[in-house]
Length: 242
Ligand SMILES: [Zn+2]
Ligand SMILES: [Zn+2]
Image 1 (cartoon, rainbow, N blue to C red):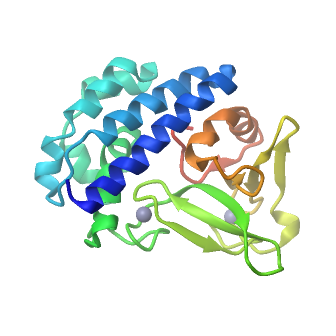
Image 2 (cartoon, rainbow, N blue to C red):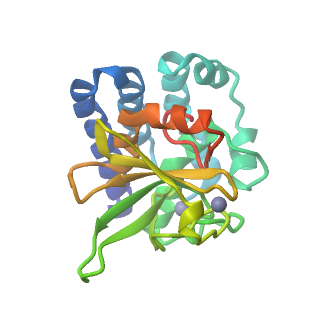
């Protein structure tokens, strides 16, 4: 196994293990966490290659896992999955497609780790054009507070962004950028924008550095349901598909 392939497999296995750990801690989120644990394990086991066609041949185990263990809607979708969807999603020709994103995520990570340009249309992520599915706050070395980072849903690249700025429309007026959190999980919050009605979920890594933001996201889905009731739309759905 090459180094890039090993790094991708290790990152995916760590995420699966984190989801498994959280199952005990958050019984209410048992279902999405168990599914995420299995999905990461299936993704970690796919043979990686930079050749799109060869990779697309190797993804059947991921699709089978989703078909057998996914939430009902996604599972039904996996049973009728066709490979054409992968090229459409990769080429930026389709709208959000949960299954294609899940299938292509190890591939996008592998290309990034290998330094191979993915050849996708431009988008928020400067590496692969993917969209950010989660934000994080981590401590900065300077004295001016925490750094805000965005994490790409497809290739996993992280980039720093302004703390007071909507990642979707660029709004910078603090009065139009409300933040909502839940009493029981203060590290997770909704960073919304009243101008474009988009939001991103943010995880505070300064409170607990063991968190893996896109996995810990699943422990606070109630925040997403609440945001959606308020008419906000997540910029890029998380692992739970919302
Ligand atoms: Zn990316
Ligand atoms: Zn906005």
